[in-house]
Structures are given as C-alpha cells and as structure tokens.
Image (tube, rainbow, N blue to C red; front, side, top):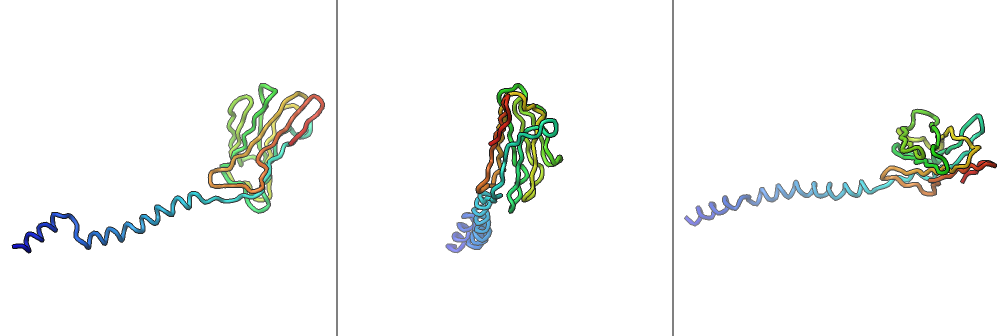
Length: 172
C-alpha cells in the first residue's frame, strides 16, 4: 500500500524526472538563441569615410545644393537620410536628386526637405541634391546625413553648409 501512495503522490506532483530533463534540453538552446539575438542586433557595420559637401552650382546651368559621396570601400546604406534646411528665405526652392530613382523626398516645410536613400549608394559613387534657389539672394542651406540603425561611419563628413550672399556663394 505504501507503494500505491508513493505512485499516487508522484502522479499528483505533475512531472517525472524524464519530463523535467526533456524540458531542460529544449530550454537551453532557446536561452542561447535569446542571448545571442541582442548581440547580433547590437553589431554595427562601418561604411567608412563617406562625405557630404556643399556646392554653389553654376548659375543658369546647375543650382546650389549638396553632394554625397560614398567611401571608396563601402556603400552608403539604404535608409540613410539627408535632411536639408534653409534660413533667410521663405522657401528653399524645389529640390531634386541625381541620379534619379535612388531616393524618396519628403517636403517637411517650405524651408526643410528630407531625402531617404531607397537603394545603397555604391562605394566610390556620388549623388547630388540640387535646388532651384537663386544664389543672387542671401540665404543659408544646411544638410545633415543620418545613417540607419546598425551603421557607423568612421572618418565621415556627415554635414555641410552652403551660404549665398549678395556678393557670392561659399560652402563648408
């Protein structure tokens, strides 16, 4: 009778030793995957020394704006944004990007627009962002690139300025 009571208490306890061992065997890989996932998410890719520079353009031929050049060793990734804002004018004009088809443009206001790369900008290549704004007035345009999460850019120049005055245009 003692044996029956022991069997009965084991049945009421819920799991036998084999069940616990099987559960533990399945849990260990799940814990290992869960611990590895944040490490993978936290890893970053270095896109190198890409550069953003201002350009005064050429009056009557090409408007002022900015040129983004990917580093010689890595592309600038899809999802990178270029935020362009202006001061000294009520409108920064109509912007376009060349080559076309690599960005989406979001007009944030009369004095701000944002481009987002819809494809990687290949290593060593450039894309320009130009406006119809005239250089015969006083204004300043600022541009800032932001990489998507998971990317860094060692040695990059991520911002630029174009300033127009009544006597000329300058960049930095």
